[in-house]
Length: 84
Image 1 (cartoon, rainbow, N blue to C red):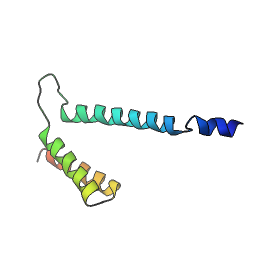
Image 2: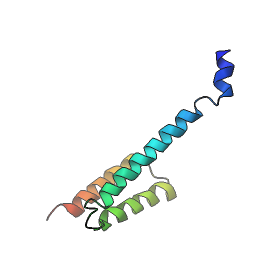
Image 3: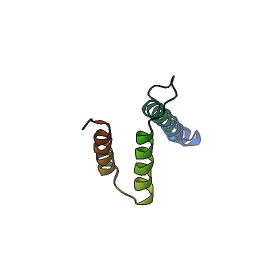
Image 4: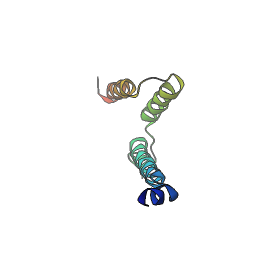
């Protein structure tokens, strides 16, 4: 009885949809605060945006592993922002 009720109402698909939506909202929240950290002045962090686009292309186009791309992106971002 319980098994047929679980399957008839779609099962875990609702939880998957909610979890995916929350993850998308969190990703957009962090992206907004990284790209426009001083949103009142309207200044865009172009190096961060270019680095995010390049990392996305490397992940999806060249099928690279996520962890090395994150590490290289983080080191590149630190190298760009740290004073010489």
